[in-house]
Amino acid sequence: MSQTLDEFLDQTLPEDFKSLNTTHRSMPNVVRRMKTAGDGGNMGALQQAMTRYGELLNKQQETLQGLQEKLPSFNLQVYLQEEFHRGFMEALAAENLAVETEYPVYEVLPFKIQALPEKEMVTIDDRVYRNLRPGVLAAHLKKSIERLNAASFDTQRFLQSLAAAYDTEMAKQIAKTKIDVSEQEVLLKDVYNILTPLPRQKRDYPAQLFAFDLHRVLKSGCLSAPDGRRLWLGNVRNTRQAMVVLDARGQAQRFGVMKFYKEG
Image (cartoon, rainbow, N blue to C red; front, side, top):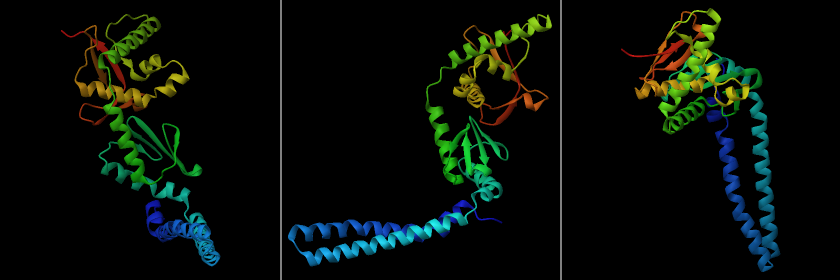
């Protein structure tokens, strides 16, 4: 079994970090001695301080060189291929974060995380994230989700936009099939495409964030749009057409279709 990143950083490098820190902390005192000797004209003390400073620099350089020689010994590509998944899943569980996963892609709603061993990096929603300790990545996701949950969310405004997109998609389906059926089901992904017709809009409002907003609606318990129609989400047989949405209890569901209907 290959070495994990935590093991490498916490077992192989700490002594070097400690040595660098100790040397760094000693340098300001030596600089003050040099300044004091210079102010007083004590050339002997100045020379001694300069010699000591040179020794510290050499020690620091030796330690730094040792670190530079050790870093290539850790194969980041192998780590991301063989060890990252286990550590990341454990870190997510420790943070109580739900995940839908099939390595190397993970969905921690509303974020999509992908491990890219060949590029020695991880991406979050296609943006590079360089902190590769699983615990640090999981904590970052937890904090980001908490920040999103704390942000204001206008449930009625979202439902109004969702209902309008649903009506547009339903009209397209009726025009295509020539069958006028009220309150018919449409694909969630098609409604999302109505809301984000341009590539830039999809980048600014990715499907995962759309799914997260659906979760916030479900969690609020308020499913009625301003016009009185009620939102319904349903499953599909073809899971490729589904979107992962957390329900009101935070459990992952694969919803594929939706509709607005009049109660009663």
